[in-house]
Image 1 (tube, rainbow, N blue to C red):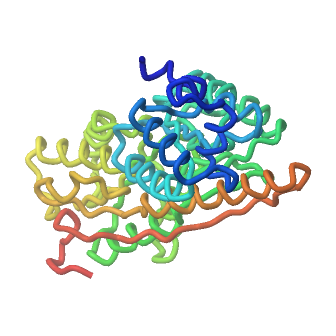
Image 2 (cartoon, rainbow, N blue to C red):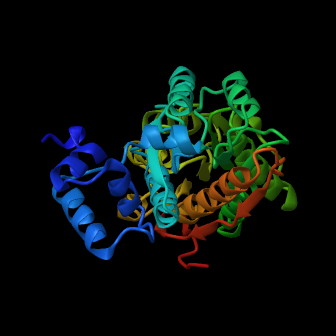
Length: 349
């Protein structure tokens, strides 16, 4: 028999018992003898029997499956988030379907529709950098599907979210550069529609204000894609200024890596001439020359907390479909990982 053709009827026919007996044996029903249960389960394993999830969901209105939409699978931060999600979900008896929007609003719309049609019990979403309209999300929320946003969130009073304190992390990074004696600190700014970009910019500005350093808008360069190439081009423009910066705080590590490339190609030294700090603490940050100072985000913990919150909401809706689940927001702390790219004074904090 082929794997996908094995049914309860096949097992019943092989053992010469009724399909209802097989069904009850697989559910460990007390009316079925231990011998029959053993025979049924052994044959089910031998034939690679798997329950029909679709049929079960139609009967139970629950699939024990959650859907996840992330911007990019290759992104180190999001890969750690997925690990955290799966750690909690599988322990709680839930399967996980992962999709990626590939930073496309249209793909995000397609993914959310596909997950809904797959009858997932709830969704975990981190929006794409193109997402500036939310009708596709509102449509699913209106149908009562539990939904939790993480990292890149939909700012809606009725939605739950797990975020990191981007403002605090950016402020700590900028204060560190100020502590190293830097006064002309540039900022490579990320996608303008994302709340994390706004929070990181705000943290940068607050740090300057706290030390009475005037804000020079020419030192804030747009990097809407947050790529290595953008970081490099933006830094080349900064270095061409009459008074170039003595430090750069980038919205993410790829942009910071591009900045480091431009600085080196200009014949300047890091951090002696220009200090550099990134955000996210990608796995390659410690491998750069010099190693990159970066703001670490607890990706694994974020995934865990997002999955816990979603599953809790799913279970509440399962017990009472009419219940009005109250939205929750959890903010996780960041941590500045100081490395050689920013140490003008030659010491770690």
